[in-house]
Amino acid sequence: MKNALILLAGGVGKRSENPTPKQFIKFGNLNIIEYFLTYLDSKIFSNIVIVANKNNQKKYLNLINKQYPQHKIIFSQSGKVRQISSLNALKRLKKFNPKNVVIHDAARPLVSNKLMKRVLKSLEKNVACVPYITHNDFIKIKSKENINLKNNQILYIQTPQGFRYKEILKAHSKSKEIDVRDDSTLIKELGFKVSLIKGEKANFKLTYKEDL
Image (spheres, rainbow, N blue to C red):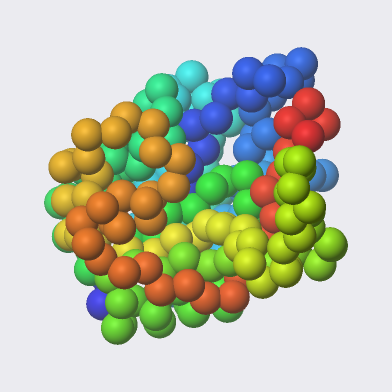
């Protein structure tokens, strides 16, 4: 079975004073993408598409194939918004004809191989699979009414999100929206159900302090 990974790394960090986009910040000798690839099981995916603009690709990722020959890495041009970036990468995968594709944010480098495999396992029976976590803190809605919510009523959606390749490509191609921030939203528009599985609290999204 062919499984492909799309790694979205097109963010440019406009809200931050730091000139380096967060996905290229270094932990020791490795930037975040290099850290992710170091610990990614090479047996999970047949192909990996890294989505980045050409300048960042040349500046930060020009040696990535030499560094990680165990991964079959190609590149795709990022778009002005996430949705365009995802579609560009999906089109890039056409010639490889994968059965499944996993779309993941580069700014979540601590995702485990176990979660990746669980997402793909779900695709044996489902068209789409999305991980989520709940919150431990007390949740209250800011309004004139005194509304309290139980923790299990609020779901924090994560990536990696898994899809049958043909269905998610069709969903992106048919969408009339131009800035949907979540790929699973598009698959729902085609009438497919999305399977939800427990994610990992360690799989958090890295942020600058300006993002908070």
